[in-house]
Structure formats: C-alpha cells, structure tokens
Image (cartoon, rainbow, N blue to C red; front, side, top):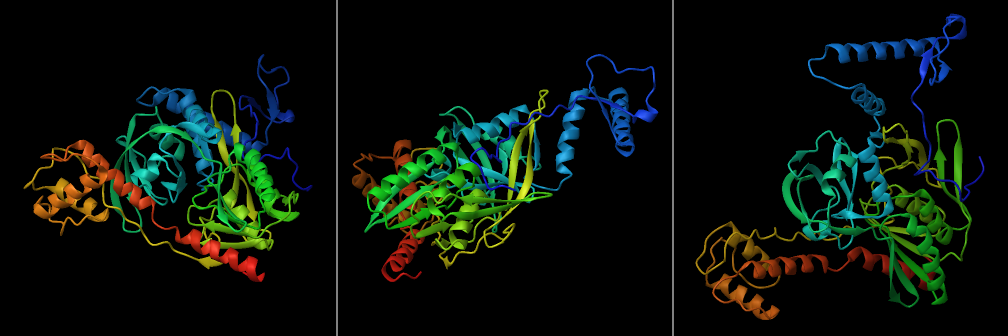
Length: 481
C-alpha cells in the first residue's frame, strides 16, 4: 500500500452503515410475482447466512410474543449488536449506544466536566490507565492500574468504559464517589472527588538548561498535531540540542497526531507497520525537521499511540527509553457511527508493529534504562466529622497524626489520642501556615493539612526525569548513550 497521507485517519472514520434491509433468497428461489415492499432495500444473501438470519428473526418473534416482560425490538437489536462485538473476545471492540458514543467523542474533543482520568477495559475490569497532571483524580490519589468497581453506588463490573464515563463525568463543582481496587495488594479505597472543567493537556515544556528541553505530551489529541510542530520550531530557534520527551501516563489518542509528532522527531522512514486482515501498511515520517537526540520517559501508563512513538524513537536510532515497562496495547481502533439511532461501534482494525518488527501486545516496551521511582504513599485524607480538641480519641485523630508526621511535624507515635505531642505538632503547623488554631482544629484547618499532604506528595524529586536528563547529557558529551 502507499505510505501514509495526511488524509489517513484511523481513530475516527465517518462511515455510516445502514442495517435496515429485507433479506431475500437467491434469485433462483425468489417468488416471481412477489416484489419487495416499497421503501425496503433488497440484497442477495448466501443460503447459510440466510438461515442464521431466519433463526435470529424466529428467536426475536418468540421473545416479543412470550417473554413475561414487555420488550421492544429495538432493545433486542441493541443487545444483539452488543453480543456481536463481545463475541470477538477483544476488550477494545465494543458496541456503543448513542449516549456512550457521545461520551467517547466528547473525550476526544478534549474538554468536559470530570475528574481527569483515562480508562480502558482490561481483563474484564474498568481500569485507570492514566491521570492527568494536576487533575482532581491525581490530587485525590487515584493511580494508574486502579480498578473502578463502583461509581455513585452503581456496580461497574461487566460494564464498558463508556458506562463508567457517563457516571463519572458531570457538572464542574459537583462530586462523584468512586470505589477502587488497587492491585496487587487488592486493597479497596473510596474516593469522593470534586469534578472540574477538564481540558485535556496537549503539550507542555520547560527549559532544563544547556540546550536541553523537556516536553510532556499527555495525550495525542487533535490540538497536539497543531501545537507540537510550532513548539519544535521555537525550541530549534532557541538552540535545541537534546530533548527529554515525557510520555508517562500518556494513554494514546489520535494516530494522526502521533504521526505529526513523529514527523518532527523521527528521521524520514518507517514509524509503524499496521497489519490489517489482508494487507499491511507502513506509516512513515516525513522527517520535517533536523533530528535531535531524544530520551523518552515511559511507564505502565504509556499506551497505544504513545508506545508507537516510543518504539519508533528507539528502533530508528533517535534515542532511548527511560523508566518502566509500557502498557502493551498494540492495536488500532476505528470509531464507526452506524446510524439509525443505534450509536456506533469501536472496533479493532489493525495490529501494529514497531519499525524493528516488534509486536508488544500484552508485554509492552522494556526501557533501555530502568528506573522505578520511589513509592510515595501519602496518608489517607482526614475525614472531618467534629472539631479536633485536646484529649480527643478516634480514627480521625489517628489520620491527623499520620498527616502531621508526613508533613514533617512530629505528632508522635500514631495512637489515635490527641495528646500534648500531637497538639504541639498541630500548633506548629498552624503557626507555619499563619492560621489561628484557637481551642480546636475546625474543618478549614483540616482541609489545609490535607492540602499540605497533597502538595508534598507531588513535590517529591522526579527520579525518572533526573535519570533521563543524565542519559541525554552523556549522549551530548560523548556521542554515546
């Protein structure tokens, strides 16, 4: 096949499929004087498929006539469409009703009311793939790999991600309750998260000095394809020598946007090979700009199109990968509206292989330099139920002690008793923050302590970034990685 053109779009195809037709037998069996009714579409169907359709129609008639509850033909056909896609045993292929399709398209539009997470169906579970930097989800402590088992009291076991999105998203300022299971310890947590207006980040950058720049791509949205080339032109004008490209927790997105980034980073030639059912297609970089040494930062939240780019950077000799093994999603989906008020389908249409011929489905990309960041486990949020006064005993006091110790104030051994040492630590916190404590810690002080815990958990040194910058500095100084 020809190489990629700018019009090639795999993630969103405007295909309208008309499912309304009248099945007729082959011409030799057709009744000679029985023309199809007006308004119908006739088509020839192989005999074996006609029998299947007749069986389906017969079951439909039985259910509509004899089931003890009233059902509609539309309800049955939606169920049939759902079952058709589920029979593929492909977690990335799903039938989406109109509401679910709208929710998915909204996420691709990159702006909505929600908490800032991306989710996928993994092993039959709705799983967090990534959290957006600075989002309500990240601030609450939700992590990649968490399994969402319940949202707003609704059991999500056996549901698709779009079902979860419909519950989790909502008006900014409202709250959503989530119950999550965290493997491998299998611990369960409940989070109450306030929704905000989520504008999915595209590209952010900063100057690391000595001609080294840091760029983070959080997702390949449509805006990414417009922003990235402009940013690269600007950085080249500033004397760009090397790039640290942060793809951690990037769940993928639009393949065209990924290719626009590859045009800037990968030499002219292969970026990814798509293997469809009967053919192959190699998508190539145009080599739009001078190639610079690049370190790609990756982790378990690096998925799909982000893995395509990371694989191309390494296989084409542009740079190395630093961090942790990537997610391992090596297939491409199309979103296909089907018309008739039936929503659409999300369907896998190709597997992809890196330029070196590697298919990373289920295994991901192993980094060249493995860096597992030190786990930062902040204490649980303090649940405010009452003013906290001297001598009080309870789980809320225990949570207060954990939080004060975490922020560097010595509240003593956590025992759930608000004794002199804990009170002194509380006084120290309020003095440092310029807050009047008085005789009790009211809700505003508890909120300030929770905020201090969150801030500290996010201000820990970025070990992966530091190691990536070190690798790039070595490359620029010696010519070797």
